[in-house]
Image 1 (tube, rainbow, N blue to C red):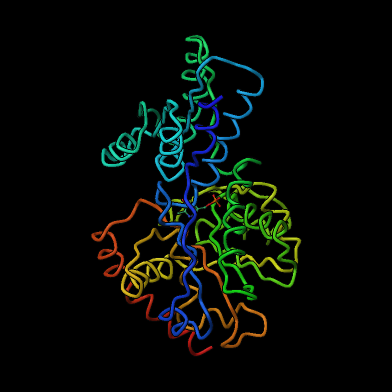
Image 2 (cartoon, rainbow, N blue to C red):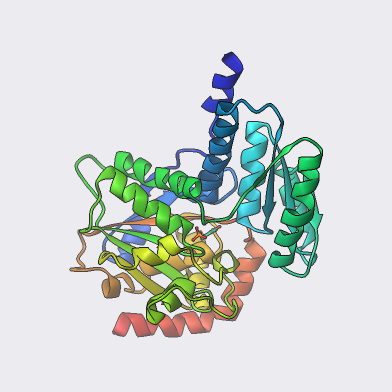
Length: 352
Ligand SMILES: *Cc1c(COP(=O)(O)O)cnc(C)c1O
């Protein structure tokens, strides 16, 4: 059937470039490669995981022969909501997003522009928005004869599988015969880390390859779990890196800490912000602090502290995971607010 092939041949994410950056390599003192996930249709790597979840649901409902229309539901005022509406609209499905009442109108507009069928503001926070979605909106859709599908942000097999495609691309894109010594990624709920780890297993990138899993202080739910030796829920999020603001990581991410090649580390908001403005200057790319915190490792000799046998020939891939909640104005504000602290920290890293 022609139409089936046509639908399945569409992918709601793109193959992104992997570029070697002379400027960041010079700053880092080793070879830095950037995986440009900021170029995804939703402006973050989440297009992969959530896109794959939508494809997986589509395939499943086709396979069981259901004819009722799929309708996707997400509770998010961030990149997960954007990835959900962008993927569903590319594939021709309806989507509803519930955001907390305090959400700025610009975010609601962005969700609509990117293809949301409806955006509903409800509740004082994400938990309330999520409850309303599950307890009221999804049953209503069911009653209308639709198949409601819940889109989770990170704790889901199809999402990890989608994120893993990033590593398959990297393995094709590295210069012939070369493999990275380390991959750096940010951690919110740990979906990206889980997917990267699965992807590494898939392409045969083994335990000699380091993974640096980076969080900001105040959104460090993986690091706190590592310290506690068990999966913990942190009391609150106090970091500006709102896309890393998950109080409890998925079990799969926590379990990865048992691997010797996986290192959990935490930097300050000032460092995440610094990397945002320096990446804008150095590569003309603008990203959220959630992404900046990974990029920060390329600056001020930070990498030398975390990479094994660090030298100029080491090859490091930084996942530029992107994010849509950033603007020139915000970068300017970050610079004013964090410039001095960033200089202090640079001195500390460079002299230690
Ligand atoms: C969601 C997100 C993260 C964190 O990803 P997880 O899979 O939740 O760990 C990091 N950066 C950006 C830009 C994001 O949108």
